[in-house]
Length: 491
Ligand code: ADP
Image (tube, protein in one colour):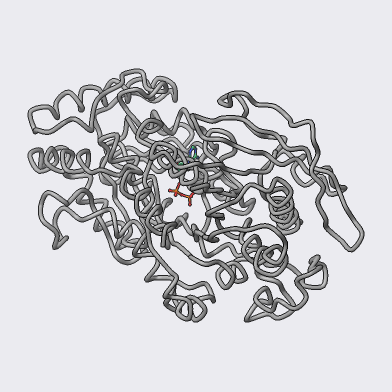
């Protein structure tokens, strides 16, 4: 079975968030299951090629079409990333769509990725190899099922099945219809935004045109079919519910492995820990990593519980609640480290102020960067990780945290509700309970979960150790999800 993933992100080479981790983790596990997998990405100028093997450009250029008579050349690059075959497309187009410093954040993002989507199909069509599954992700590549259905299916090019995964419905790829190159798609009404007919909506088109639509957690599949969670697409999703499937993301157990993590000063085993007697070793290792982290950040070591947040600082992630959580943690005698990337200038200003406010505080650090090594060390050093998301399609940080023996405090939303079960209030068996949760995304909700969580490491030691054991034993690898995807591909 030849499976082609088309994505805007891939961990290790071009990452902004969880999309990158998902495509990497799923593709790697599918390779492990002997599937013939390929990932196609834009060739960004900011690509990290250091992990790629056999990275090279093909001699032959591929031609692609944008406007009526406008044809442009593309260089096709290939490489191998941890056993996964990767194809990169470099369009020589006047827009210079990927010759930029960042992956996203430009006024013409919708045009850039539409161009890429078109080129992917031109490339696959010219290459001629049969594609059994064409799996696209989010709005950036959602145009592909639309283009395939309306333009390419009639050509001599056959795709067995198109699959669209919804990682985040909040981003839909909307653009002025007048300025969008619709050549060949003029009669495909699926792209016309249901609420604003003067706009195209790429995600909406993809949902209608794809054979299968998946969400990144079972609970998110339910939420997006409600007016509160559907971001305007709930009626469409209800209409297409028979092709909608919710599969929980996994995490890559090699990349996120405290035993072999190159960014930790003191690696440690968690997945093989089976008894409470072994918890001491984990706590010992975590303390060493915490001491190292504190020396890097110029913080004085203390045995106060450390709460971490590792996140993009965008409205979805509850930025006000994060700020509240910092202050509450301090008032309850804990410490806090926020590692947050700031793609939105207004929020950056708010958090920059916060960073300065706490610059000299011995119990807080606010670090406004995307820093992979620091994220790993922080996962290992912290006792708790807070995720007060307003909505969270899947969420990876709660799973990563548990793998590092760090207990999540999570708002019950999307995939967080599928993976974090409150130690006191959950109705699940004791062995499944692995964190602290709250329902309402407000200050009282945060206080309720955070206060209890902060009291556990010292005041409820036995329960704390059991909690750690349950969290570390949970299997969040790609083993089961990849099998579920294979079953869907074979439907
Ligand atoms: P999203 O995809 O919405 O950003 P997820 O929880 O699904 O959220 O995935 C976030 C991923 O990005 C995790 O691997 C997390 O460790 C990483 N990450 C988020 N913010 C940062 C940061 N500031 N520095 C380093 N890694 C980060």
